[in-house]
Length: 92
Image (tube, rainbow, N blue to C red; front, side, top):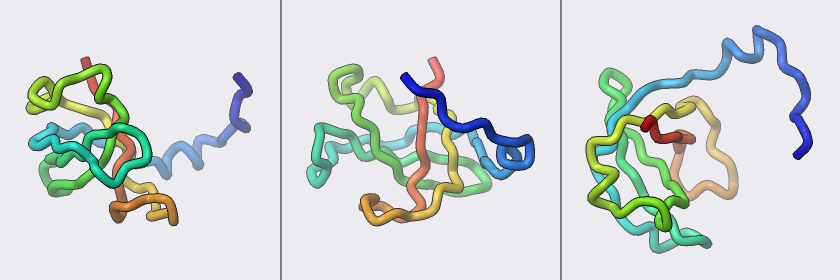
């Protein structure tokens, strides 16, 4: 695996990483690969939507109440179906 280019501290400071709690999980029918559509409560930031290709790892019921870390300031891209979708990782 190739490493990405080095970033400066100023680059790192631009990343907004927040902790949130998954409040709902649904099958993401429009996704190309089997995925869940998540609603995540970020407290003062509000509720945001994201998706995750983790259907082989978790049942929907297992995810409710899990806390996750997410980068919440990615811009919308052409391939995203949801506006300003956080990129999330589950905290075990």
